[in-house]
Length: 596
Image (cartoon, rainbow, N blue to C red; front, top):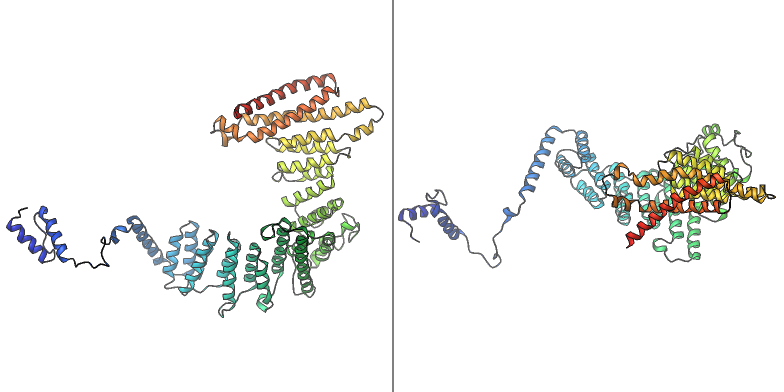
C-alpha cells in the first residue's frame, strides 16, 4: 500500500510525540496508532503470555452504576444524619423496606465517626429474621472489628435468633461460643436473660448435654436461675420424653424397656429440679409462675399412674386449685363456694402462681390422662367462673376431648353452644357428634346430636358430609332406650326407631342439597377455572358427599323395607331415594369415564 510523503511525516510526528497531534486523514490514523502501540509495548515474558487483560470490560456497567448511586444516596443521608439515634431509626426504616445493602453501607460509613451499635443490632436482627445465621454472625464479627462494641441487646438478638434458626445444631455451637466469649469478657457480663436465651437454643435443638453444661455455673449473683430458667429445662426434658416415646432421632428402634428407662431417667431429673424449685420458692428466693407449674405438670402427665396422680396436688400447692379429683377438697366438692382457692385468696397472697389458659389446658390434659372425666366440669367451672379465665380455642378443644372420653353428649352439646363461632370447625363438630354416638345408653343422646347438628347447619356455609354421616349414625345407633321403653310392643318400638331415623333424614335433606349445589356454583376464587379443573378440585369433597348419599339411601331402604314408617313418609322417602340414587350413578359413571 502506498502512503504519501505528507501523511508519513504526520504519522511519524504523531508517534514521536505520543499522540500529541491527531492524524488528519482518518483512513491512515488506525495504521499509525497500531504501529505506535506495537513499537511502544514491551515484549511479553513467558509468565505474561496469553490474552491481554480485559479488566475494564469485565466490570458490569449496570452494577457499577448501581453501586455509585448507592454511594451517593448514603452520602446524602449522612449529610443530615449526625445523631446515632437518628441513624439507627433510619437504618430500621430502610430495613423495613428490605433495602439491606443500603442500610449496611450507611452503617459502615457512619461507623467511621460515631458509635452506632443500635444500627448494627438492627442489621443483625434483620439477618436473623431472614434465617441467615452465617450472615448475622459475620456482621457481629465485623461490628467488633470496626470498634463498634456490642451491648447486652446485641447478644440477646443473637441468642434469640439462634433459638429460632432452622439450623439448630449450628445455632447451638455458635450461641455457646459467643456466650463463653461474653462470659470471659471484662467489658460486659451475661445476665440471666442471656443464659435463658442460650438454654432455649439448646432446647430447640434437643441438646440436653449442652444445656446442663451451661447450667453448671449459674449461681453467681448476675445469673441466679429464675422461673423461666427452670421452665426451659423442664420443657426440654418433656420434649426428650416425647422423642423417646415416639422413637424420633437417635431413639429410633429402641425397645419398650429402653424407652421406659430413658423416660424414668428424665422424670427423675425433673423431680430433682422441682425439689430445687420448691425449696427456692418456699425460701422466697424464687417467684413461680403459671408456665413453670404447667411445665412440671405436663412432665408428670407423661409418667406412670403415680406421676399422673401428682398433678392434682401440684395445682393445689402452687395455685390453690381445689382437689375436685378426690371427691373433696378446699371447696368440699362444691362449685360455687368460696374458699382458699377463690379469687380473693389468690389476690391476697401473691406467692402463688396465677392460673390462666395454660393451666386450664394442662388440667384438662391431666384429667384425660387419668380418665377422671366426671370432675372435668367442676375444674372447668372453677377456672372460668371463679378464677375468671376466659377460655381460648385450645381450652375448648381439650375440654371437649375430656368430654368425648367420658361419653357425655349433653356436656358436648353444652360446650358447643358456648364456643365462639370463629373456633367452630368441622373437626369440632365431629368430636361432639362422635361423643353422642358413644353415649348410646343415654336416652337423650340423639336429642343432643340434633342440637350439635343444628348448630353446624346454622353456622356453616356448607355442611360437613362426614358430620352428616355421624349424625345419621347417632340416629340409627341410639335406640336401646326405645326398645327398653316398648319391650312389650315390638311393633311400636320399630315405628319409634323408624320415626327417629326419618327425623334425621329429614334434617339432612335440605343441607345435603345445599352441599351439592356448592359443586355446581363455585366460589368467587374458583370462577376463573374451567369445569374440568373445578371437578378435580372438588373430587375429594364429591367423594365424601357421595358416601353420605349412600348412607342416606341405606337408611331409607331400612325404613321402607322393614315398614318402619307410615305411607306418607314412605312416599317422600322413595322420591328422595330416586334423586340420591341418580346422583350416585352419575358420580360413578364419571369416575368410570375418567379411569378409561
